[in-house]
Length: 189
Image (cartoon, rainbow, N blue to C red; front, side, top):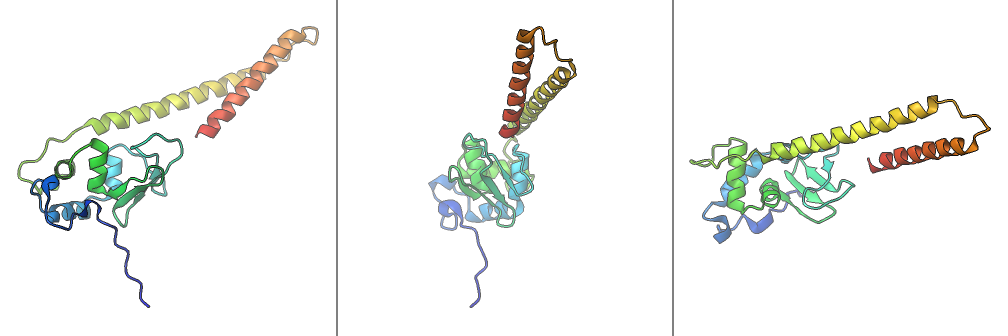
């Protein structure tokens, strides 16, 4: 028995006649956009950093563990945390709060597809979000290095004389606390 090839489900039933929501755009426009714009490129363009498995933290809800999966072959995405899923047009709809027609025009403008006569003005807010994420990563790395340097400095201090047990206890407590903070930061990553 032959297996049928996998075909991703088209969200919002775009294969039928255009509705009020599509504002007169034919379904072929959405099909062309989905075929021409890879989901991985759209995710990178709008500031998501995918790991080698195509996962990252979902932009639609807050989380610490990546549950947002991008499927490059099928051209779609799915979040195992909030259940959001669909194609590249649905992704832009949800990310920017647009209608399907506005999302199609935005993708056309951002990726220079030339499907529309009057292109929509490209929005560069994704650059700001990407810069904010990179700055936050640099800040975390700087804090980690400060912690490591402080631990190295504490390890180089010779232990105080046994005659002053209070100072020795304070140094040991500080050292244990810094080690605890270092382990907690390692678990956050």
